[in-house]
Image 1: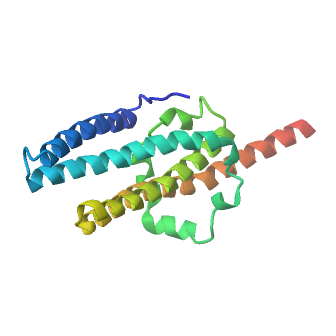
Image 2: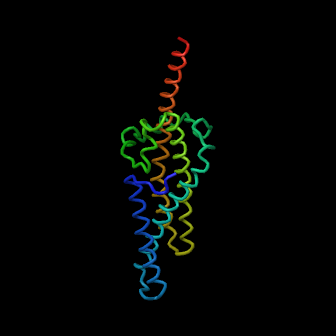
Image 3: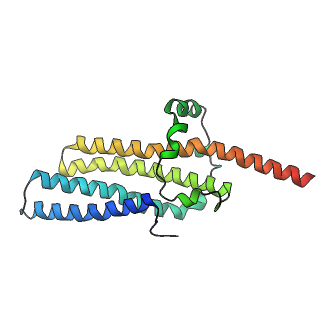
Length: 195
């Protein structure tokens, strides 16, 4: 298991975390030591801390969920396509924009390196990770209890949830298509064996 990924999105996330930690420590240090008791300094620190919390939480829980990888597979009830989904994906025009979304670990979805079944299970784990990210997003609203102005944290949580929601939609849109290809391959193999 690689601790640090080297894809563009992963490098971006680690860079933002490093910058966020530095900026929040500097701003909180200046504000709470009374060196610079200024709302701009405080809210810059809070913003940096919240962004760092979002990114770091996603990386940590994404790695923790790898421990349960074998418990999660595409055949489970939760991951089955629902009747309403096809229509929803047409309305959202998923087919047009899904290829433009960032992928944290693109080699896990590479057909040259992975079987269709491995990709399906990766898609399933990815969906679970993004559902966990939705909970991380909701949890940031509690920062409003510490610093006030809860509406800012609610707005940030909604934006983060929409961001992660796109990845859930992409996994759920693609998975039934990959399953059909896998079933077709398996059927062809069975027919070949019979001959």
